[in-house]
Length: 310
Ligand code: CP
Image (cartoon, rainbow, N blue to C red; front, side):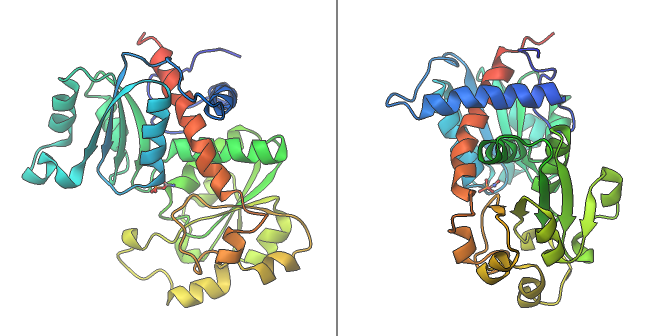
């Protein structure tokens, strides 16, 4: 396996090879050991400056990137669109170029528009990490999800993983589908027909509309958040009806008669896609996902910083 990524930027999982993903996961193994030491900091990115540009809300991804950068001794600058000159009409390219003029080496960006990172990568020199672009991709979430499945089950290859819920509006779903398939998993999506993209079958996933059948099939269930903020029309009658058909509670989980690992990218709508009992149960690896996010993001930043710009 090459010790170098095949890409200059992390724009999406689609652009990564299986070797790239495996390199990121094995590098994250090392950083997970590092962040569990009494002294969690390494000098790997000393003298590298990273700008975290968040044009959309975030708790986990933003905190996780900031911690990953600090653990690697990078210098960081944080930018939130809500209190910036974007509000005065400055364009994305102007905003980023002004930040880069202050000698920034890498940009971590979350943006509401699908493709914003790809667009930026064509106009600026710095390395770009996509921290979520609209309903398109969320590559570091998929990488930390794959890392967490591998940690729990020993491997991703051959595992049956169902992604449940609002697939239509989910960047987590698309990145997970690409990532898990590249690692040899079988992937199913499950949810209301109205929340399934028309092109879903072309991605080579199984499609199931009955949650019980999906749970009976899978080893791992990744429960997606209902993204009401991206739904300008009604995709189901009420949240209560959604929960009745696609919500996971302990009664349903226990009735399946086998051990299923429960994941959720967060933020959780407790009582909508999963109950608190499921989220906090022994089946859940939700907080492991959050912990692993720091190690995975350290690996991504470290590998991209080390890649020459050839
Ligand atoms: N999983 C995730 O992207 O969460 P945030 O929106 O809080 O970053």
